[in-house]
Amino acid sequence: MTTQAMPTAAARPVPGPPTAIRLDGVTKKYGAGGGAVTALRGVSLALPRGAFTAVMGPSGSGKSTFLHCAAGLDRPTTGSVWLGDTDISRLKPKALTVFRRDHVGFVFQAYNLLPALSVEQNITLPLLLAGREADHGWLDFVVGAVGLADFRGRRPAELSGGQQQRVAIARALVTRPNAVFADEPTGALDSRTGRQVLELLGRTARELDQTVVMVTHDPVAASHADRVLFLADGAFVGHLDRPSAQQVADHMTHLGEW
Image (cartoon, rainbow, N blue to C red; front, side, top):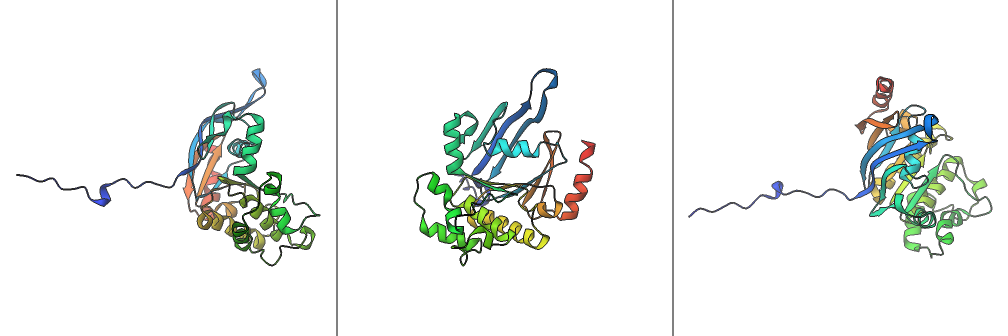
């Protein structure tokens, strides 16, 4: 009589982290007829929860269009965009606005803080607009994570540029979004403050289990990400995992070959 060995644990598939963002065959065209411009060409990718991803490419490569489509700020011409289990490309305008408010965080180069509100009031503004009460435990955690525990009552004018950007990051996190999108978040900051903000975005992904997608033109900024995706002529043409700034810069010099 023969016996069959049980499969070892190593042979069993290990599930990976859940997908936070997925694009399936996304194309984006502007205009019509002979004057139409194709900004994205059949883009498909999936980004896991808890990842910090940078997107780079030359001017006109489609970086901003990709960010806007992935975040639900613009609709693809064809294809679908999923945030978590929701196909946001099929939502009607009002439902999409509500979904973005509740499930998407934005960090832009302009901090977009309201000068009359305190740090805490600026952070909790998305919750106020949604008619939701703040989870004070989570709020305390987020404020502490971005290093603003001692600044909650201050106004934006009393903060440095880096501190104001931290407020914007905390505001993006307070709703526990599916994903945080950052568009050139360090473009207006000096190198030291920019490095602090990039380190904070990395911690946001790895320690708070948030998915962060950053568009940047700066190889130094991109080198802080777990993965750098490269766009050329509306399509992804390569990636680097945990690269140095020099590796990113070298890769960018060869994008013209595509």
